[in-house]
Image (cartoon, rainbow, N blue to C red):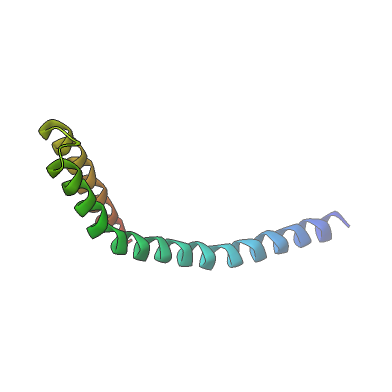
Length: 80
């Protein structure tokens, strides 16, 4: 009886994992696409904020560096 219960639980876990992995991959692909679509707008808004005087040069450099790091991190994880 216990062996049957363990086997049933194992089957349920396997089923959940096999359904979860494709969803995770699809969600990751969708997030990547959205990020690619938003990148030019985010950069443009950053530049506009700086040119309109809402940021100091130091603030702009700080946010621009964060923007570049995030973009590089995303690009480097795309292949994995």
